[in-house]
Amino acid sequence: MTLKIKDFCTYEQQLDILRRRGLIIHDEAIALRHLREKNYYRLSAYSLTLRSYNPCSGEDHFHAGASFDDIVELYDFDEQFRSVVLSACTIVETNLKAYVAYYHSQKYGPTGYLNNKNFEVPWNHAKLLNALSKSLHLRKDEPFVLHHHNDLNDIYPVWVIVEVLSFDQISMMYKNLLPTDRAAIAREFYGIPSRKYIENWTHCAVVARNIAAHGARFYHRPRINPPAKLPKSINDYGTKPFGFIYAIYHLLPTSSRTQFVTNIQECFDSHPLAKPSELGFPLHWKEILIQN
Image 1 (cartoon, rainbow, N blue to C red):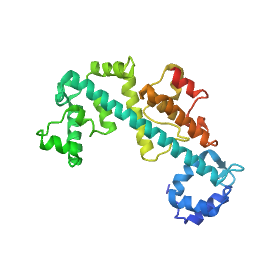
Image 2: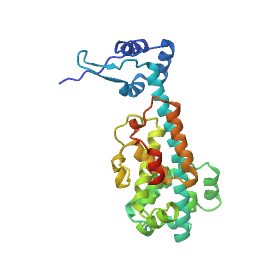
Image 3: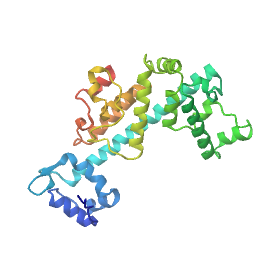
Image 4: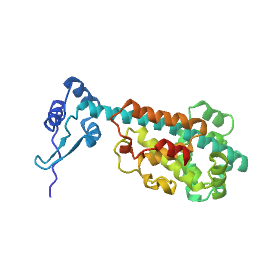
């Protein structure tokens, strides 16, 4: 079977397709501007909940009353939601770097991270040092890197190296610490008795940060991997955006959690068309975050 790629369409033709499928266009000039600035394919993802397949025409048809403005509202909601996630993940990343640096230097000394005996898998430790070398080279002109290069013979304490590691890299560094060290950090800094939760949640936070940073979609997203490790009572939400919100919430310091919840609620308040259920949010999601 030969698959046919869709033909190129001008912005005006794209708008005609939407209109033919039943979408209300209140202001053509504004609609054309959004198509030009955001891409038809990108915007169309936010129309998925506003249309359904019509077997007669062989195309999707928009629900009665659906408008281009509705698509933009859902797009704007997701943009605001991504901003909230990104801001929270920045705090989580900063905290993880601080916790790992403090704990590891206290136990093994400022440069104990160079010894693979202080890590679980030597190969992963080697990959970390290789990534670190590349990161230091890329940031060689930054004052703190120059200082350690020129004045301290390229000796970088762990509290310095965490600052050049990406979120993904510091997450992988944590996961490769000795099991007893991972468990100690989970207890001491997160108040969680099981290191497995922190290992999983940091991975989930990295994934959520990447979705947010690269402008991918949370709204009406059926699944995100890896599944977030959740209490049994809410385990079904593990692959939903809510499961990742749960992970981020519990990685945040207690001083930041209330604001995180408030910011999420403001996303829904600002965009009434956006349904929490389309992100896998249970009805009493705030109570679940706080109580579990």
